[in-house]
Image 1: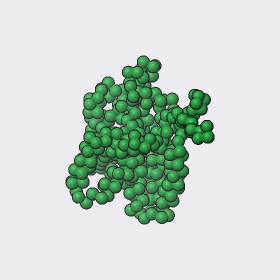
Image 2: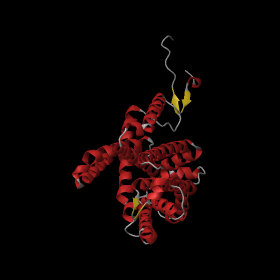
Image 3: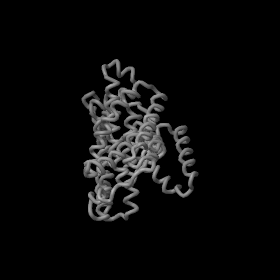
Image 4: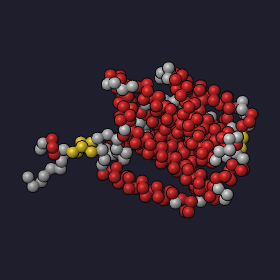
Length: 342
């Protein structure tokens, strides 16, 4: 048996089967307005948006090492930009969502320059402080309701579609599209040369720097891109809610703590992890939501047990046991099958 008998591939049978199943599931989800009820569509739309937020946070923390507890800054920023651009600039809501992403990227540049001077726990605290600055700043804008918040005008809502059923379907499709775009973008980015550099930084930052990788620029790019996409997701969230306030828009509990829980439970540093974590989080939420504050205690206990018993998350356990990779990023060396007739 020689080296020529071995093959190198990025794909696998599990990945190909997963791609077919994902395509079938996606077709069924696209058709949801014709088979799902209003409550189910709203729940699935929320699930898709949390999946997008979790995937973006996982890209930052799991690959770039940027453990932020202040991404609610861009969720709230995107939501407020949606309201401001539709109410005062007269933009169509969908155009306002795209503009919110661009403005989020611009806003993140000076923030990154500032907080990238911090390391470790100081970086995490710095991101939270920035989010509080955003919250206090928007609370002073009386045109957007100040501290009490504002509702999206009826004319803006109806500009999406004249009929309520069509508006709900469009909001659902936008949420589904956001999740698909984010997961696909993260996957393609990690398969690119910049993604390879990012993985090298995650594995060993010192070694990556010695190989000529510009660590600061790579992390800066990831932070700006994830902030822009997070702002767009924030705009979508509050397009569904139709009302915004500083406390709701910049809630560390809703837009950061739950997202971190999702990533930790599913498996940080993997694409599959946020998907599994989102499903587990929503299953727990729908099952235990009637328990009040006990529900939050259960979430905390689950997170602690998972970090102690399975620090790599649910997908980490599955991958190590069965050698599965549904989103193949690296190359695999495949040994030839033994020739029984030899």
